[in-house]
Structures are given as C-alpha cells and as structure tokens.
Image (cartoon, one colour):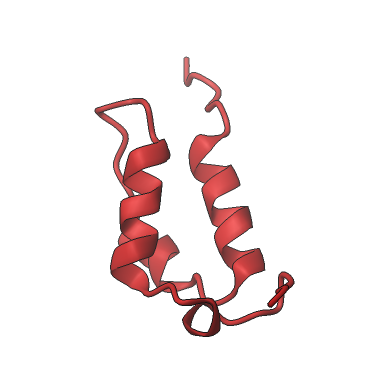
Length: 63
C-alpha cells in the first residue's frame, strides 16, 4: 500500500523506538546526539523525512 507525507507513522508500522534506530543507523558522527524533543515531534512520514534531513544535513561550524 503506498503512503505519502501525511501518513501517520503508526499506520506504516513505525514507532518511536524504530524511528530512533533508523536515525542512529544513518548518523555517521559518533558524537552527534539525537534531540528527544525533535523526535517527539515526529508523527508522520513527512515529519520523519524532514527530521532525518535535519539530522543528516552538514552543520555549519561555529567560530
């Protein structure tokens, strides 16, 4: 069954622990932390896509 950005994660078979596992597998920087507040705001496939993009996007260094 196809789903879109508006599909709730529970309907596609994902829950917070599986989302956390996906994120931890994709993050290559061992020092990067996952913000639990950001994770709590992930409810749909689109939320997950945007949240993961934010986690994986290169961060600008602070001078």
